[in-house]
Length: 175
Length: 346
Image 1 (cartoon, rainbow over the protein chains, first blue to last red):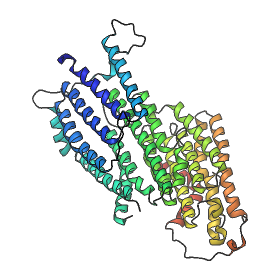
Image 2 (image 1 turned 180 degrees about the vertical axis):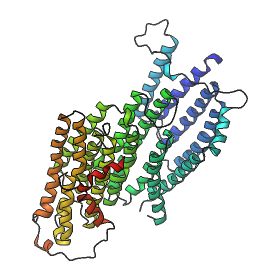
Image 3 (image 1 turned 180 degrees about the horizontal axis):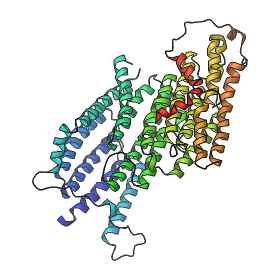
Image 4 (image 1 turned 60 degrees about the vertical axis):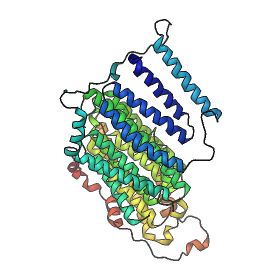
């Protein structure tokens, strides 16, 4: 099972993406977003990017998604839409699920069954090596460099986030 | 809007464009575009009614899509060249995607559909910022990647823009839509000469910004957004009527006004590069532009538009003071003899 862990995680990843792309109510979308975020972290960690995966867990899931969850809980409606409540939503979800099942079958059984359409291999999508020297991790050095050589980036992104908050408040304030 | 917040947001729009123009790292350029887009949304929505909200939503959606395409082109460029500096784009796919993204930001055909709708839905001052300042950032990036732009795509988009800008403006009576179609056509002229001589693109941008600023300020001065209300300016401020005439003819590209300078230089540069049919077509299609400017001058300055009798005796309320209007008017009409000075733009 462990040799196929990335494959299984990627299947769960795609299914949760289909789950929120079929547009149920935001609360349920946030739920599968958490699942897909966690599973995505698992995929990255399996390829050796432990720092990046932990960052996504901490900042994305633990920071942004929590805020999203709270604001959605404030603005939710009385009968939120689930995947089975609306024909359209269920239809899109089942369609996405069907496509994923077809893809899984293609990957698993491409020797036994004659396949018409072949992918041309990994090619340019191969993962580049993280370039670990083995002594220190490059990613942590990157964070340190962000605050020394990359001070301008910190200033610009910090200002953008601040102005983002101002803009959102201004837009939702109305008259 | 709270004046402090309004100033902050306006300064952020300026900062965004400055970051785009002075960065050498592709990621910073993208951040600059996003900062610009984010900060201009509340400016577009200054008056709070459904039309402005719809216009700013449309603007946000199209510009965000263009930023995403730009990011994809940046990443493809990174994959094939391994570095983040702007010199030229090393991969033809990335170059095509980047040109399309910047064309979406500028409002070139076939991505021009948002320009009239967004310009119509917002106030005159916001429309002014939209049509002049927001064109600076994408044009500066096009200038920097101009050696590696695919000529066929850019010229096709440019010529189609001139056609659409001229043809689409023919049936309009709303002034903001007329200015939007005029912007589409001028962007077409600017990008047509980009690959041949980018200095002329900058010259055209300069003269276009001056003329558009002048036109918008004249509209703000007489508070008119339709042809009908513009035709009453002879009663409010007769001097403005004459100035509208001169500025509109300059926008149409008539000598001896300064609007002729960029068109003349562009046609000369194109013919130097052995393309004769193209500038002929462009000049003929610019006539469509001239036609609807002339129609505006006809109803405004040259004839008295039919109106009820009490419109002919308007009470003069306090007129708005528009700063910088006289110098702008002078610059947008009398700059033609200074053409030899355009070598300073290099």
